[in-house]
Length: 113
Length: 114
Image (cartoon, rainbow over all chains, first blue to last red; front, side, top):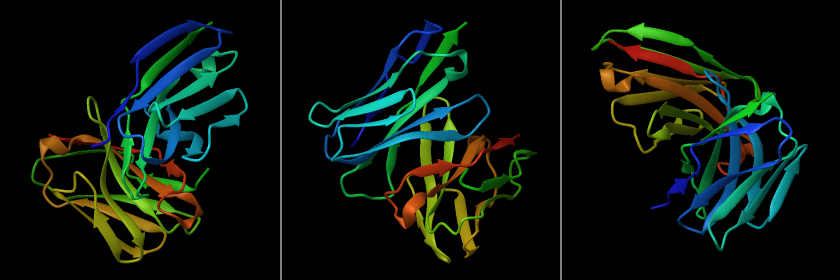
């Protein structure tokens, strides 16, 4: 059974710092992996989708990497801003390409001015 | 913006009453999903749909039913609400017409069952 873990559960950094959020999964046979952010009381906003054949994806100040063999993905945020404060979730879809997406419980990021 | 609207956004109801949550999309996506989000459990799939009148169960489907009579609307019904169904419910769609496509979520419907 696929399990997705995000450590730490919470992270606080000063504005301007570059930071890395971690996502690990137990079964390396994945189809794709998606990163989301969630603001309090809001829905999930898709940030990046990485297919199993890809090593990384970039969008603006965000870069997500994928290492299937080690069961890890990282989300790199450059030059963090207070507006980046949110909970970041990763979700993994198994290799069968089914409807099932397994979510981590998220990392709550606070960027202090 | 994936054009997803959920209603109602907030609802308080009593145990044993029926509740229907609506998800409306404007972009003709084939796949639609209902998730619930609870502290300590994260997001879990309730039901999903792969077309009009085509639906299937997710991992936490007990106590819930769904219907999709039009491409744009996916309804989630709690036939007899229980306190354990107090949660935030999210509708989502897959882009690209594939079940493996990128997921986009609505703003959520917060349900409280007293």
